[in-house]
Image 1 (cartoon, rainbow, N blue to C red):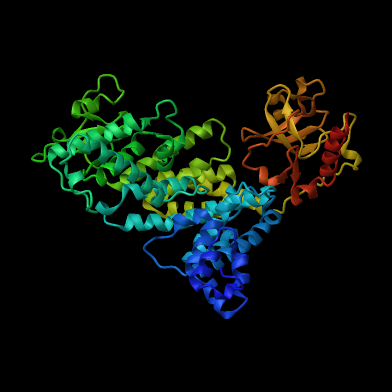
Image 2 (image 1 turned 180 degrees about the horizontal axis):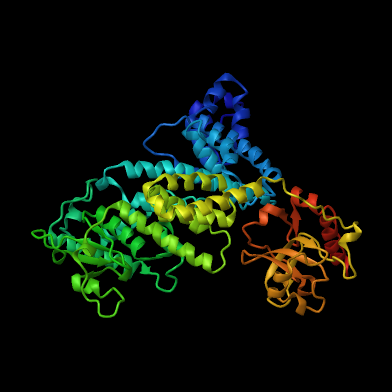
Length: 607
């Protein structure tokens, strides 16, 4: 800049370049724009606000289509306002629902209304909730806000994804994308993770490029190489198709080390395509979808085969015929092995079975593939329930999706009702759904079972409608003390002397308040002080809630965060030494936070 020159002498293009700088935030740009009408026009540049939007909320970038035009200043304004409104709404949740097992669906209505204003607001609501859950830059994260934010996000994502699923299912069968459905399936089961079709396609495109490079080393005249500039997949000869499949096998399994996850077969992440790409491991069905999509990009059409116990792909190796023997089968789980009909039958681990009927080798619709994916997760959800998962999140989510894909499935509808009754949630929905089942012709055979469940749901609803009886536990109340004393307080990180698990206290009783049957089952009378000692409600790092005697607990020498799904229901912050109770927990235990603080203050002051 020449001597004596001012910013007024700079061209508008130069001023805009300055305003795009990472050093300047949106407040700086706005304040600069207020100085004069000329700079106000410059500061309203769409490119400036596009950059500011993605600088502040980088995860939003994948939510915008490169083919559409946007008013970036309006997008930024809506995103900023939306963030404030979302947090204001979330603050009201803890006082309303602290004493409830589940947030009722009608409570999400304000978020649905906010997101329903336009496409931009939907993006903004979901993104703000994502940021709330994953923002690790905030030094003092409000755990209670995060706890309810996750519940809202799950509900909002599922509402949004229901519309996405309907669009997929309404398409003609041959146009239903396996890739899109696989990503929707992953999003449905991981609503707090930022998964997009666009991100998955980008990763697959990189694999496709590697396969092309591999093919070119063996056949420079291959149609995939000759027609690489064309956007449409090339038309390949039978021999060229073989070369593509061999190239996929070499790149995917030998170069990139993708594999079937035999060791952790029942890990739910094996069922989600974004995680399969990240971990390079999956189960037959997700490995097959990945394999088929790569082949599709390279001009080879593979069909899904719903083979018993082991999902496969098939390629029409002999186009003149259409019997199972005219196809080559691909085991994407087994490093892309090429199989004939008899070799496929050997995959069935049943003694003496070496031949399967023709129906097992038929190509199936995308909807059938999606249904099998859901059934896999339902099996995993049942296994988790048997192993003590009290939240049944996997089972609940996939029952909802199963009924979205196949609304007439009476078996899953009844299972969903049983799960809700077990968890004591969504009881009005249970009654409505059971009545609909009863009205269906096939419901007559199950009428006694359905009516029994309706009676149970009605009884549980009546109990839930009663206002909760909340007893305040004051330390200056004589009834809360006995000879042993309640020396531990809410928020303290503890270690179990016998089982060595880490936990945090979220409640206590001056003596054991459980039934005699429970005490006998848990061996309470074998303790040195039996039931006549303080008992503490604790959240355990393994996700369980337990009730532990004072003599079995000790202060943790190295306090650590407790990864429990309900931590935010009771606590708002972890200090590094203990948890600070939220306002609702403070109301019940008004003196505990002060006692916890005093404990650590005295510990730090000790020589």
